[in-house]
Image (cartoon, rainbow over all chains, first blue to last red; front, side, top):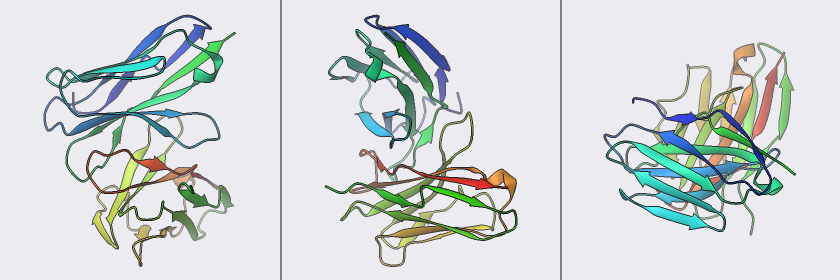
Length: 112
Length: 114
């Protein structure tokens, strides 16, 4: 994998259901992986900064895992709520300058 | 506290005109980044400043694009002879230092070239 890829492109989830989606990234020259949530008309907001293989991070009902050897990260949303509706972006960092290489995002729509 | 501020929030300009987009980072953040998001894509890196200097401008698409950060705080992205393909959301982000630390984003400037 040379680029950052996210799948699926979009998800429609019923309120209360759990969901997850994937970020694939280059498995070489890994420095860090970030997850951002971008709600319409707002700024992208950092969810997780992940640096170590095997990292698992959690913020409320949202959690993420990281596998740097195979080049993927999963983001999980447990018990989805309408306020979870947003585009979720992952970003790969290859060096200490912090330049983010983004995927195209997964758009999540949670319906009541 | 104040976050990253970008002005204007929306800009419509005619093809061929010159535009300036401004970014006011969080006070004390030394690292500043510009990204551009075109429809249906993720944000793409344009340029990275560490302090006043552009440490990496490899993402600027051509010589019509230029950015400055003269005092190590506010940054201006300048686009000359705008083209319809320049239409996008331009995002600015700052970090306390470079590296893998969290980036704090502004709300972006939506540029439309007609």
